Image 1 (cartoon, rainbow, N blue to C red):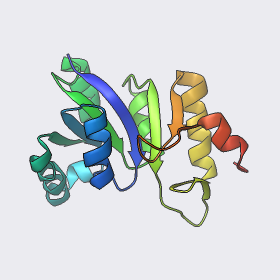
Image 2 (tube, rainbow, N blue to C red):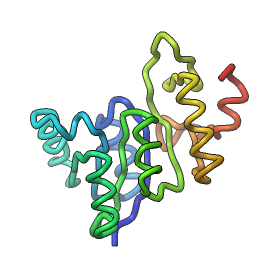
Image 3 (cartoon, rainbow, N blue to C red):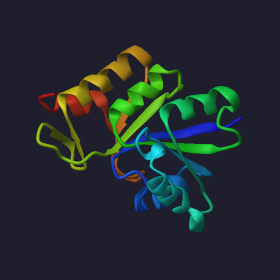
Image 4 (cartoon, rainbow, N blue to C red):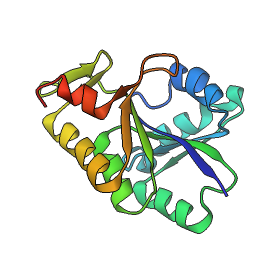
Length: 165
């Protein structure tokens, strides 16, 4: 049986910080990118899946439904896995369909016209903030904001109390 060692929203998905800091610090052996669009794009899917050879990690790109099926059939095999999401709405869809995420790390979301910075690397829209509140209140998911393992972790309450969201 596998283990979810981290569920993280980072719109950059796989990059140096994830590969070096998070994966090594959590002693994981796999990263699963859960994204409906990328899972349907053969070129991008192969780019992501080939990106971890030097790190000894297994990378899989899956749709939400594929991730749910994998969890239901074999609890992610033998993998200690980091789940990476490009956006918060995909996390909500995945949780609504039954993936048992207990903790969610928000690590990097670029600024958009209708978003507000919560921490220096994370900008949320009102909808994002509402979804995070829902995940916390309705599913008991502990939501924190943290760019790197060695930076300060900010709770959902503290982050949103200091914003207008």
